[in-house]
Image 1: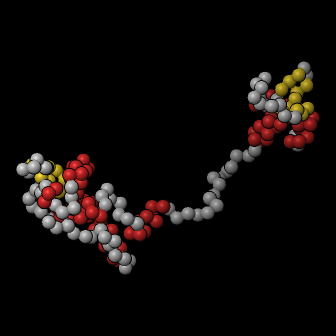
Image 2 (image 1 turned 180 degrees about the vertical axis):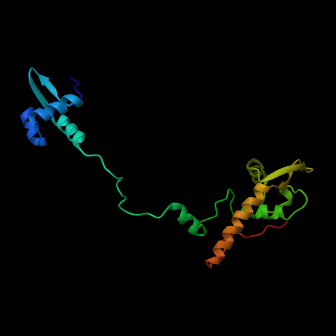
Image 3 (image 1 turned 180 degrees about the horizontal axis):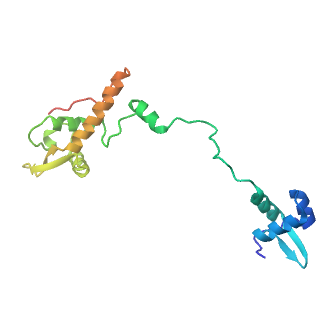
Length: 181
């Protein structure tokens, strides 16, 4: 016997049958079928754990799934109706969206020196995320960049969010600021 499990109270077949309100013979038959009894000679013995195991065997399975105690609105509907209450789900912040807006208004490629509030790290981040592509290099060997469709998609998401907030009487929260040279 494994020493890590203490032995709890032991019942005879008669005592266990009385606790479960079964016949002695029916209890022994179930105990043998499910391995939830012990035998010493002709006598069958049942531990507290055996009795609990037999009780689980006797339980009727549910006919229907248990209904939830509280009906919760589907989360998808909540987000569709209330997305305007939270910051737009874009991969850029307010300053970066302003830089993307500036780039979308430019026809020629620009370097970080030609874009207010955009340093080399911002340009590198945009390149990694695919929001801009490099077209050339300037005299200081900085990349000259133009906006991609992915960058324009970030602007579109923010604009949709701003429009929805306006419908609810709320401002753009700084997401509509412009960057100029």
